[in-house]
Length: 119
Image 1 (tube, rainbow, N blue to C red):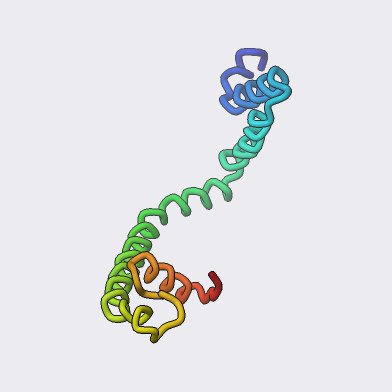
Image 2: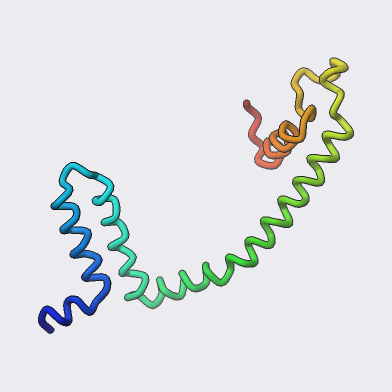
Protein backbone atom coordinates (compact mmCIF):
# COMPACT_ATOMS: atom_id res chain seq x y z
CA UNK A 1 0.00 0.00 0.00
CA UNK A 2 2.41 2.71 1.19
CA UNK A 3 2.57 6.44 0.48
CA UNK A 4 2.15 6.03 -3.28
CA UNK A 5 -1.12 4.15 -2.82
CA UNK A 6 -2.30 6.78 -0.36
CA UNK A 7 -1.74 9.64 -2.80
CA UNK A 8 -3.34 7.79 -5.73
CA UNK A 9 -6.76 7.91 -4.05
CA UNK A 10 -8.28 11.32 -4.72
CA UNK A 11 -10.56 11.24 -1.68
CA UNK A 12 -7.64 10.58 0.67
CA UNK A 13 -5.71 13.50 -0.80
CA UNK A 14 -8.83 15.68 -0.42
CA UNK A 15 -9.19 14.57 3.22
CA UNK A 16 -5.52 15.30 3.88
CA UNK A 17 -5.77 18.74 2.28
CA UNK A 18 -8.87 19.67 4.29
CA UNK A 19 -7.34 18.50 7.58
CA UNK A 20 -4.05 20.32 6.96
CA UNK A 21 -5.80 23.54 5.92
CA UNK A 22 -8.12 23.40 8.94
CA UNK A 23 -5.10 22.99 11.24
CA UNK A 24 -3.11 25.75 9.48
CA UNK A 25 -6.01 28.25 9.47
CA UNK A 26 -7.33 27.61 12.94
CA UNK A 27 -9.33 30.84 13.13
CA UNK A 28 -11.06 30.31 9.77
CA UNK A 29 -14.27 28.32 10.02
CA UNK A 30 -14.79 28.23 6.24
CA UNK A 31 -12.25 25.47 5.74
CA UNK A 32 -13.98 23.32 8.36
CA UNK A 33 -17.22 23.64 6.41
CA UNK A 34 -15.60 21.72 3.55
CA UNK A 35 -15.31 18.67 5.82
CA UNK A 36 -18.94 17.88 4.95
CA UNK A 37 -17.78 17.03 1.43
CA UNK A 38 -15.81 14.14 2.88
CA UNK A 39 -19.15 12.33 3.13
CA UNK A 40 -19.38 12.40 -0.67
CA UNK A 41 -17.19 9.30 -0.57
CA UNK A 42 -20.31 7.31 0.23
CA UNK A 43 -21.76 8.13 -3.18
CA UNK A 44 -18.93 6.41 -5.01
CA UNK A 45 -18.57 3.50 -2.62
CA UNK A 46 -22.20 2.45 -2.13
CA UNK A 47 -23.89 1.25 -5.32
CA UNK A 48 -27.40 2.17 -4.20
CA UNK A 49 -26.34 5.77 -3.51
CA UNK A 50 -24.58 5.91 -6.89
CA UNK A 51 -27.70 4.63 -8.68
CA UNK A 52 -29.87 7.14 -6.82
CA UNK A 53 -27.59 10.03 -7.80
CA UNK A 54 -27.55 8.89 -11.43
CA UNK A 55 -31.37 8.70 -11.43
CA UNK A 56 -31.63 12.23 -10.04
CA UNK A 57 -29.18 13.54 -12.64
CA UNK A 58 -31.05 11.81 -15.47
CA UNK A 59 -34.36 13.40 -14.39
CA UNK A 60 -33.02 16.99 -14.21
CA UNK A 61 -33.54 17.88 -17.92
CA UNK A 62 -37.17 16.75 -17.76
CA UNK A 63 -37.73 18.71 -14.55
CA UNK A 64 -36.24 21.78 -16.22
CA UNK A 65 -38.71 21.47 -19.09
CA UNK A 66 -41.62 21.13 -16.64
CA UNK A 67 -40.38 24.17 -14.68
CA UNK A 68 -40.13 26.26 -17.86
CA UNK A 69 -43.65 25.24 -18.89
CA UNK A 70 -44.93 26.24 -15.45
CA UNK A 71 -43.15 29.61 -15.71
CA UNK A 72 -44.69 30.19 -19.15
CA UNK A 73 -48.18 29.50 -17.80
CA UNK A 74 -47.43 31.71 -14.81
CA UNK A 75 -46.38 34.55 -17.14
CA UNK A 76 -49.47 34.15 -19.35
CA UNK A 77 -51.84 34.28 -16.38
CA UNK A 78 -49.89 37.17 -14.83
CA UNK A 79 -50.25 39.27 -17.98
CA UNK A 80 -53.90 38.26 -18.33
CA UNK A 81 -54.78 39.17 -14.73
CA UNK A 82 -52.87 42.45 -14.94
CA UNK A 83 -54.80 43.35 -18.08
CA UNK A 84 -58.20 42.26 -16.78
CA UNK A 85 -58.05 43.41 -13.17
CA UNK A 86 -55.36 46.11 -13.28
CA UNK A 87 -57.48 49.14 -12.46
CA UNK A 88 -59.65 47.68 -9.71
CA UNK A 89 -57.52 49.08 -6.88
CA UNK A 90 -57.61 52.60 -8.29
CA UNK A 91 -61.40 52.34 -8.66
CA UNK A 92 -61.64 51.33 -4.96
CA UNK A 93 -63.05 47.89 -5.82
CA UNK A 94 -60.14 46.11 -4.09
CA UNK A 95 -58.54 46.89 -0.75
CA UNK A 96 -55.06 45.81 -1.87
CA UNK A 97 -53.33 46.29 -5.27
CA UNK A 98 -53.26 42.60 -6.17
CA UNK A 99 -53.03 43.07 -9.94
CA UNK A 100 -51.79 46.65 -10.46
CA UNK A 101 -48.42 45.63 -11.92
CA UNK A 102 -46.96 42.48 -13.41
CA UNK A 103 -44.85 41.90 -10.31
CA UNK A 104 -47.87 42.22 -8.02
CA UNK A 105 -49.80 39.83 -10.25
CA UNK A 106 -46.94 37.30 -10.04
CA UNK A 107 -46.90 37.70 -6.27
CA UNK A 108 -50.67 37.21 -6.04
CA UNK A 109 -50.50 34.16 -8.33
CA UNK A 110 -47.70 32.72 -6.21
CA UNK A 111 -49.82 33.24 -3.09
CA UNK A 112 -52.76 31.52 -4.77
CA UNK A 113 -50.60 28.66 -6.01
CA UNK A 114 -49.01 28.01 -2.60
CA UNK A 115 -52.14 28.93 -0.59
CA UNK A 116 -50.16 31.35 1.56
CA UNK A 117 -52.13 34.41 2.55
CA UNK A 118 -49.97 36.95 4.23
CA UNK A 119 -47.74 39.73 3.12
